[in-house]
Length: 453
Image (tube, rainbow, N blue to C red; front, side, top):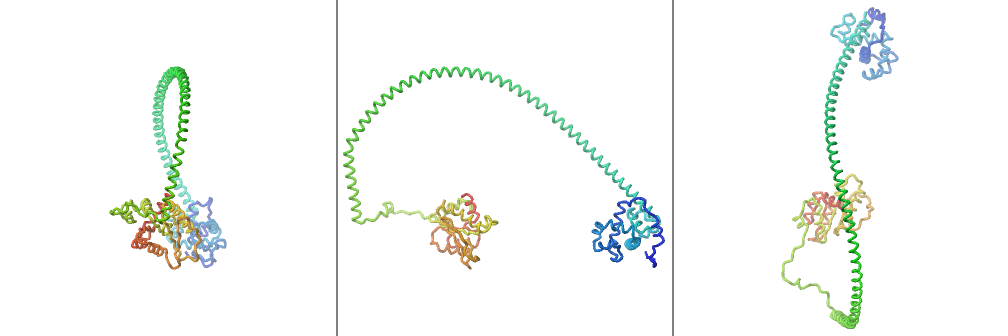
C-alpha cells in the first residue's frame, strides 16, 4: 500500500473518512484495534509517532497495549497520517485481509472482529457498515454466550433444587425416625421413673424401720457403756495398786544391783585399759587379713567394660551406660562437641558447652565416676573462660592438637585394667580408643541417659 507523493491520502481513504460511527466502537473491536496498533507501533521511528505517543516507544507490545491503549486509540482517530502509517504496517503484516477489506469484500470465514478492526484502521468506503456488522456479530455472540450460560445456570439450579429436595426428604425421614426413637425412650424413662418412685417409697419405709432399730440399739449400747465404765473404773483402781507394788519391787531390785554393777564396770575398765597398754607396748599393727583370706580357693576376676558388653542390653539402652559407670574406678571421657552437635546443633557453642556440662555434673553426682569432657581448642585465639562444674574435669586441646588426639592421650595415660568409657560417634576415635583398651559408646546413648537426669 503506497503513500501518494504529495502526502494526500488515497481516494478510498478520503471517502472513508467522510463516514463516521454513530455509536461507540464495540469493546471487542476496540481491544483488537489497540492490539493492532501496539504490534505495528514498534516498526515506526520516534519522529513518525504522534508527540503524545513518543514516551511509549520503548515499551513492549503487551505493556504498551496495557498502559497506552487509550492514547493510541485517540491518536488513531484524530491523526490521519498516523492512521495511514498503521494501515501500511497492517497491510504488510496481513496483506490478504487488508486487500480484501479495502476492496469491500472481506472473506466470509474471517473473524468479524478482525475485519472490523482492519476496516477501522484502513477506512475504506463502507467501513462504518463493517464495524457496525462486527458489533452486531459480537453482540449476537455475547447474547448466545449469555443464553448458554443462563441455560447452564438454570440446569445447575434445577440439579441443586432436586438435590435439596432429596436432602430435605432424607432429613425429614431422619427427624421422624429420631422423633419415634425419642418417644420410645421417653416412655421407657417414664416406666423407669415410676419404678424408681416405688423403690424410693420402699426405701423410705425400710429407712424408718432401720432408724427405729438404731434407736433401740443406742439405748442398749448406752446401758452397756455405763456398765463397762463402772468395770473400767474398778480395773483402773486395781491396776494402780499393782503398778505401785511393781514400782516398789523395782526400786528394791535397783538398790540391790547398783553395788554389783559398780564392781563389774570397774573390773571391765581395768581390763580394757590393760589391753590398750599392752597393744601400745608391743606396737601391734592393725589386722590386715582375716582367717578366711588364708583358705586356698579361686577368687573371682574383676569386671571390665568388655564383660559388661557381654551381658549388655541394647547398645542404645541408657542402662548400659549405668552398668559401665558402676564399675570400680570407672573414668568417663566425653568428646564434647561431638555430643553437643549430635543433640542440639542449632544452639551457640557456649550454650552447648553449658548444657552438656550441667548434665554431666548431675550424672557424676549420681554415679560417683570420674568424668572428663574434652573440647576442641586447636583454633582458639585465647582460652575459654569457663567454671567447670563439680565432679567434671574440662579440657581444651592445645593449638595444633585436635580433641580426638587429646582423647587418645587420656586413654593411653590410664593404667591397664582401669575401666575407661569414651563417648564419641567419630568412628576413627572409637576404633583408636578400643585398640587402647577403652570402651567406646555412641553420643546418642549419653544424650538419652542425660535426658533422664
